[in-house]
Image (cartoon, rainbow, N blue to C red; front, side, top):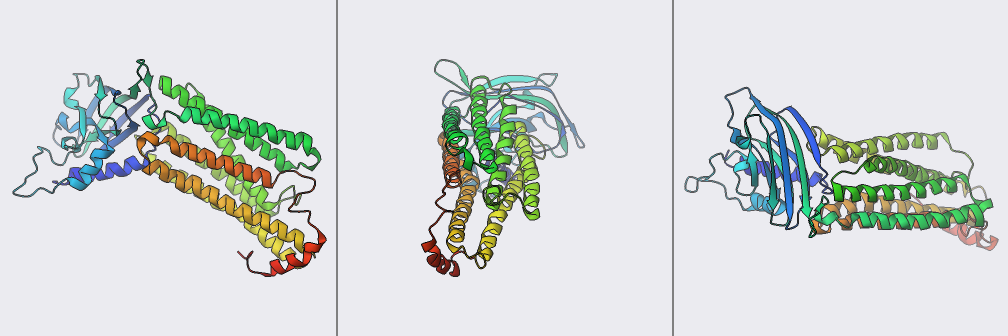
Length: 446
């Protein structure tokens, strides 16, 4: 039991990595006969004027063994700085250096955590309500610990984590998330301008050259703009009031819509639908039939993860579902692009239009590479930024994702814009010979 607390701290570190620090909405949750040894509630970046408010009602325990000590149940804060010290600097106890903790197997007795209170502080009805100051700025995780073996806990818990501004108002956004509402508002304006320009191109300037895919792309821009607006409002109201005032519903709705339309647009562009051919093959239809339900499932999992929190039993499972389904969607949308490239290469041997085929292959190859780069950046690099960036600069990952998305949209919309004489598809006949030589090379082999 000597190093049990240190091992538990390591497990808590893993749980903290899975939790994306974003907001500390006012949370209220009920627990019924919960036997978990630790429950992670929130992760929050505090300033020097930070506070944690915890209210408990109806707390009780039930054990199969002897009546447990109330001091074995309690709440504590764990900072990232103290966590690393606990893992790497805690010496193992020996006969000459015994562990001074009276209960070495309980994380509440670890010198690296900041205990708030235990069940020994509850009143006779199992109630407790107190606000604790956090004077040392850092990113802290709020945990509940149950150190009694074979014991379950029943309670209702309300948590508030916030910083106090100089004017006395509460800020429920983590220190590193303070600029996020402004970031989303800025990009909402960018998408509004983008949408206006795109509507001018598709409905006026090149109206006769616009295809159905271009109108679907218009819907994508509108969905993305509404997503940014709802995200900005959601974060703004959480910041000032601790609750999203219903904007979370709009946020998840438009997150679902823009996700479904984005993957549908990528898949349909990859097939060449409407601007190269007026119909979809059966295998292409099957891709859409797989991608759209997967996106719906991914967004449901994201909503469960975002709205409940890590205190939910099975929260890690929902995280895994979201990651798996999202990766599956990213892989599925690439198949139509690959099929189109192979089909074009096969048709170049018989249709006698080498220059036009080479132009199409060049376009689809560029699109294929850019899609992979975009998906890799937004799924891997952005997550890495969230993990390794100092908690004061967590807004950087949000800004990086939005910048990458705008850049990807600009590329996709420009390359596949409606035009009477598209530079990729209307080439001179004297380029045929050079194109035929290029098609014989291996550069377009997959």
